[in-house]
Image 1 (cartoon, protein in one colour):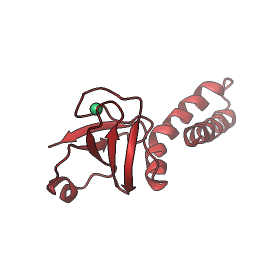
Image 2 (image 1 turned 90 degrees about the horizontal axis):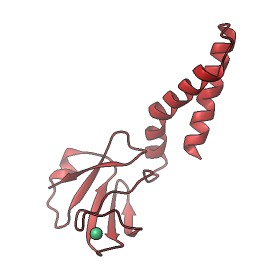
Image 3 (image 1 turned 45 degrees about the horizontal axis):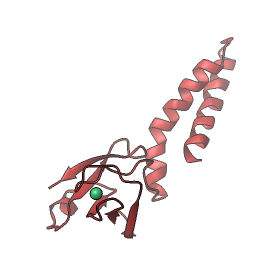
Length: 125
Ligand SMILES: [Zn+2]
């Protein structure tokens, strides 16, 4: 829903610009602007709303992408999750900060990388 809204907003803006610039086919620049809007703003909006990225990480324990994770409770910007396949516990950092990454941890830790809204992860040891 967030992505749709951003995309449509971008299409509208791009389409209008193309229209007033006298471009006959406004759809194409409109769609391009829509995609640019999504890339530029989606991550910021997701972070602001404390929304999870589209995709959850591959489990650091069993190296699979389980059907689901149990949430052990989220305390933004971190969340403890339990793998639905192997019951392994991991921690996700939604906002990267060096001090958090350096704290001692007994469970594998994953940090979300750009672009945030899609959900790419880096494992921190
Ligand atoms: Zn697992």
